[in-house]
Length: 506
Image 1: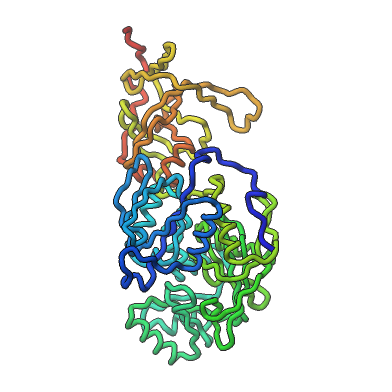
Image 2: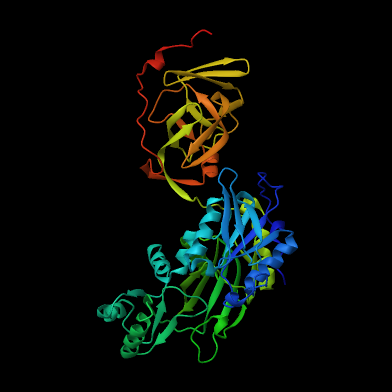
């Protein structure tokens, strides 16, 4: 039974840009045979990439497969948030992506070299919706990083230790229980490659020495015997599908590439809880979470930012956005990829991660006014930002105001209504005239931002940035920092003469 379409269960809509067509960009590594291919030939597609492309075709989306071994960036327009990629398919093709209308899906191969990582960063900077961000992909790709995350957030996982030199092999072994067999892993690797089961100290030492000759970084992990593991696909911190991968005879690894047989699997509530906890820790929008059940308890093994789709799964559906997942029957990889593309086709489901961290206090540049100290107020859900004005005069459709001893004027744009907290149903406590003004910050200029003029008493900042502008700037606020992305600016003197003068007569 196929999972019912998620759009039938979700009613929330995002009106912004909803009529703009969506493009899906897939960043993937070249086929090993690509160097032998002639220009214009078609490279071999990964199974999941092919299924994503098929799902996009059904939804009517343009799908662009970007081969990171071929592609180069030939153009960027930061004001329009566009990115132009050339030769992305080895056919001398060129495509311009509009970041705000692009879903960028990153496959594992794209993080293996600087070329792929640079392309991921370029799409992030264009404000494309990322599945997944560069940071999330690197976290999932590094087994030590993810093991440390599990420990930090109290997620049950086999004991793990890092092996850095021959002197600490025995100490690392003790940290994971000191018993054989033991699991030796390279820090990166997929499809079970780089995972070795070791039965003695001599074998462990000799294997480590051999791998170090190839500059491998290694960790040890406690061995917990199981018939197989469970792979769960999580999207937007929601469980979409789960499969039990029973490993082949004489094989301890549970990857389908190693002969494991997958079959649909229904998760218990306890399993769902730790899977979602691991998903949140990874900060990945799309993640495969692997776990085993050992002595009746679930343990997370790994997280994968580029999960495959070659299995039979138990699908999950939701009555509404806030409901718990309910199993709905068996689905295959094609059904799964369609459900994922269907989910991200709704802009209301786009959970953008900020590309920069700013301080709660920063310096911004206002057109005609100059540099001012701005407070980034994540609690400010007002329609407009707010700028301090010493005096405000309305003359028809023109607003005049004073700031730092100078007089400015602009056409009146509208009214910003200010409500007290928890004041549902009450009249606004204040109405402020608004203007449109360009605001520059962190190398970007944001055109025609609505700003309300407010003759309030001065504080340490003269401009309040609201949540809408913060989303546009794609920043998150660190409450422990100030001027993280801009030069420190002195506050305007509260006792300055500008507070004591009126408007000059024309």
